Length: 295
Image (spheres, rainbow, N blue to C red):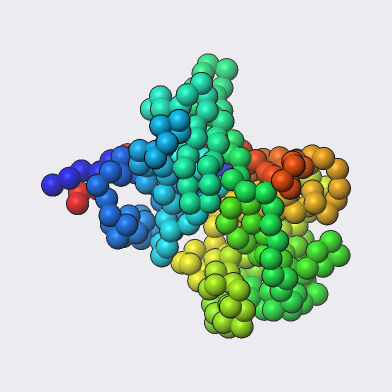
């Protein structure tokens, strides 16, 4: 009976039982797509990763990311957590890892403490900022049980944004953030009205005070009622805000997961580049569990 090793880590935290949990299958050779998807559903985390040999030997791994119901082209906390695990196994090259993914090549810098122990990672999102559909404030508010006036549209309307995977970003009033609660029927209705959403409606709500951001992310159509830390959405938000605010570089600290009892801290750096606005996102990790899948 094949034994497939895995490890779990809490990502974007320095405390056990904080941040966003991730399962990493460190040697997924021989697993079929169906088995990977079934294992991701079995683990029941926001995402699970599967590490495979790279197609290009200049890179370090091919990493596939699955949430409970489908594969993702890119995601933030899975890359940070997978890099953390592999670096602890000595699988980085001079402090850098390069992961092949559906959205493109993801470059990751390993973070260490003064004693040299691996503490986390910083990833570069694989694509520059791209924007898509704008959605009505009242429709977005209804998805999470808020009033239309709770959605702030001074800087931007609720809008699809991506640096590798698409989210709908919406600013809300500070006191409204804690009141947000997904309404599954309303999510389904809104997704059905807009075919360009392709059935994906991952809603990233945020409040902002200068460079400090508080956020929550809901993706019930994908099986994630709420996500405690969403690196790819935070990276997209950083890029969007830089594009709106002007300047060449911006830094954000994003606090997420508080309402879930899993506080998370993400550090986002966004810069203007020749091909658009690009973002990096960094955070710490905590190792939690090790085991084997018996298939």
